[in-house]
Image (cartoon, rainbow, N blue to C red; front, side):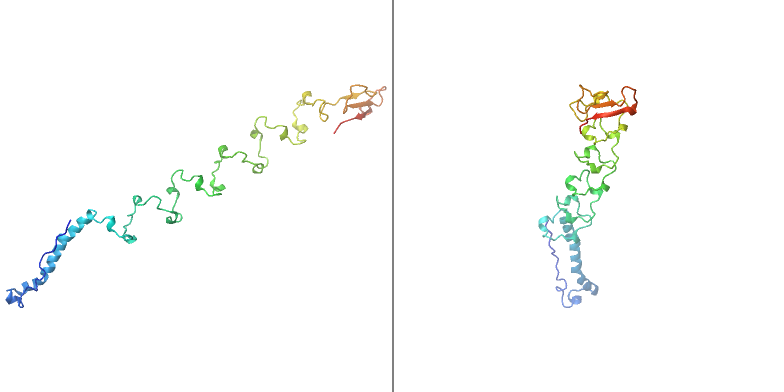
Length: 242
C-alpha cells in the first residue's frame, strides 16, 4: 500500500506581501493564523494519512524476517513471556542454558531417568527405599558370605535337603544332633571302609582262630572259670586303623 504525498503549499507566509494587512487585506488575527496554517495541515496529514497507513502495514505483517537485520532483536526488544516453547528450536536449550537446580522433579518426565543417566555410584543406600531390593534385583552370586550377618541363616531359609555332606564341618555332628534311634545298621559303612566299618568284639578266653579282621577287638576275661564282673575284663587286642 502506497502512502499519498503531502501536497499542501508550505510557503503561506512567503506568498504574502510586505504588509499583509494592506497588501493582502488581512486583519491582525488573520495574519497570525497564517503562521499556524502549515503546521495544522501537516498535523492533519500525519494523523489522517501517515499513522493509519503505518498501522495497516504493521498489522498485515509488512515487517518480514528479511527486513530485520541480524542481531537487531535484542533482549530489550522482547516483551515479557514473548519466547514460548514453539519459538525454541529443538535441542537449543543446552546444559549451559540451565540454571543450577532448575531441573526439579516436576520437570522430569515419567521414566526419564534410565541407566545411562546415572553416574557410577550415584545410587547410595539412602536412595534405596526399604524393601525395594527383591529377588529380581539381585544378580547371580551377588550375596557373598561377608554380606550375611552372623546367625542370620535360620531353618526356614534352608531349602529341602540342601545340606549335603560337603556342607557339614568335620566333627560337627555330635551326639546331641542325632535323633533317638536314628543311627541304624544301614548307617554304618561296609568293611571296604577301614575307617568307619563295623567292628566285631570277641569275648572269649582264648584268641579267636577265625572270623577276626584287622580292627576287630578281642576281650579276654581275667578269670573265665570262677565267674567275672566288668572289672575282670581286659582288652587284649585293639587294632583300629587311623
